Image 1 (cartoon, helix red, strand yellow):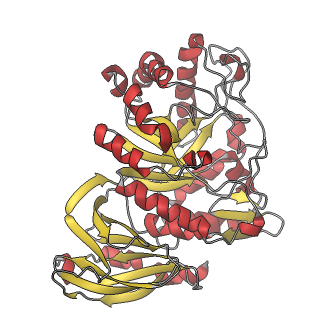
Image 2 (cartoon, one colour):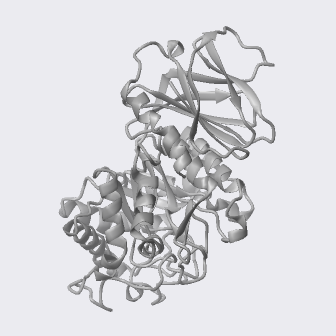
Image 3 (cartoon, helix red, strand yellow):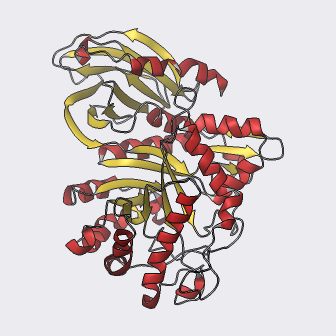
Length: 478
């Protein structure tokens, strides 16, 4: 890990000295991660300039960038601090804990995460099932987050401190307490009973206030994780009509009454496949839509045999331009230590992030930021990959290719950036681009092919030739 840190701290200086010249007159600096190279997020080109290039030929490979066309404003990139992440973190030595915090949250020596998610009540990535109240306590007088104070809250507070207090946290429930549901079980789906709409809405308020009391401010919340999935772990089913009714009659008014109208309320929080249908039904009532900030989505639609369905994001963004698209969860499932070094782990992230941002997404949240050598802990055996794994027996951290692919976005695209046009003329190259608040341009280019490829980065009739290694990702900074 130290090899790439020493090479990419230069980005901070680049950002601090952003040039005022026209983009095509600026010099470029390139940071590269490639399968067949040792360096990661390493500066491989410095101070290379543009040359005249008018109409490109079809035989000339190009990445075209047009900063005059701006789109959504970028909120941030991050990952979830679950019980599993926090419990694994607690098993590490203090120096390894600091290494992880630096790796994720430090902008100079890490990848500059600015967003986080955590679970309300237990989820599959918890070692046990728990809630914060005693059974049948409809008044919530017994509400107590003592469970979270052991591991999860201390880690969240350290992460926030590592960002200088600039970490936006949002919270998501996997299930209400069993006694609030028609199956009397936190697991295997079931539905929230209508007589508990208000107590459950009050539960979110209690949780947000309890975190605030611990020095952990909450930026936003989603209504329900994966509301159409009946899982063997914590889950709860809401139809679009159910979710709309809960927001309109209970959760939305509860947030307003508690002075939390500024909290970012996120609907859906499930896969891209049903995303447009869900938004179109949930948001059709203005009395519901007024409470909703954004539409969350995951990438697990592939379980049906489908590819990742990015066009559904575009349709949703077109139909609801006042709402924000936020990627709320994704990971590679079925953990195996034999696959920990697979390059495909990172490439899946690169493909998703580029396409998600190009479709209008404003924020992107990975699933667990840290898991152990078994892909857990997980109380139902749903072991998965994370960008970083800890071998708790040897006190070592293992950085997968996913960590570096995410870093090519999170380190160089900063909150407040605006997406600009970037397009390609070869299918093995994928690209997206942003203009940062300091004026720097970050162009991300991914080569998913088996062969190296030279291409021209073209802006306003000027271009600079760039070498793209096979199975690589690059961030070009202007």
